[in-house]
Image 1 (cartoon, rainbow, N blue to C red):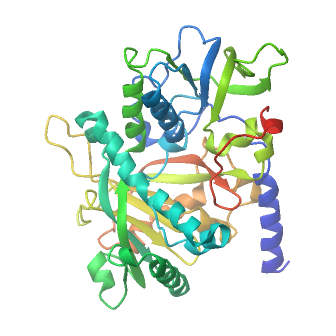
Image 2 (image 1 turned 90 degrees about the vertical axis):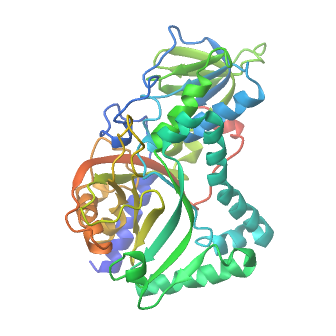
Image 3 (image 1 turned 90 degrees about the horizontal axis):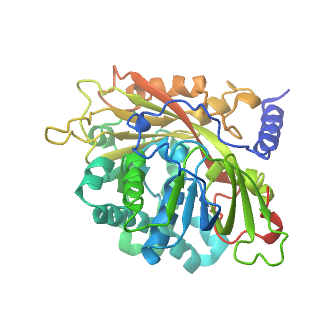
Length: 430
């Protein structure tokens, strides 16, 4: 079989795998360093599952907790039930790379084709507003939340190690800045003989800098959970960890207009007025019409030691390392706060690796990350790539060692655009 035929067969098999029912999150995921200090409410359940609720939010990651927070700001006495299959925020939000980063030029041309120039510009502006929104919410939650979440503004550095990829991205940046001339001093292209010395990279052919953020995502969401769990402010919120929603049905009682939906969970049934699905990669389990449209990809993350000579840049930089195919993403812990709190380190958080493993044929279809919800397993091929990425790509990285490794499951859409809006009536149940 030729390489071309092999890749066609392989990709067809991956597509079929991605279109499967993702099922429910597995009960025994790998241990994420971000969750090494569990939130006080991580396993919380009400003594009795509410029999009715105004709004059921399925999923307790950043999206689900954000939905609860903002609804309660508008109506503090709203009856909301947050339902989580495992411990709170134990999915992708508690397993990712700690970035809040937008590369607005990357798919801007595609967005213009989909939505026109003005529509694309609105999408980009909305994306770029997310960092400010996170900073504003964290500030409102108080100094403890700001300290715990480690949310900070950094300079995002996109380093490119392949000439063809570099030429493509330069064209994208030019197209973007033609329509956003006011941002020409925000997103800056760097190339020349001095870039590796300037940015501490090894054999990079070009770099792009722009604004970004970094954080401890699990603790940031945990700070919001702490806030909304205040029963005096929000008396009708219930938090139900370890309560997977197994199916959804519509009421057959014509008199039941206030609670038209019935959620069947592992702990009993709840009658519901409104449902908000915040299940990310697992959305198609309860919404079967989304099979193959939203699909899971498992990502590999590591925590690595910073060698003695590696610069301490966690307070002011994050990295994306772009190759001919795929990329790795890097943050570094900020300096520790003053005593008595000194738990922070200079460790490097590095994720990615799977795309390079995929195209080199190291992974059979069933073990590939595309379509996989197996966050109970590591990806050995990705880990091998991540083990030497710091040493190969960043100066003074020799000697970095993996001290923690875990996986997480992300949701991707078939066209890379978000799915937001009202669920069609014929796809409510699952």
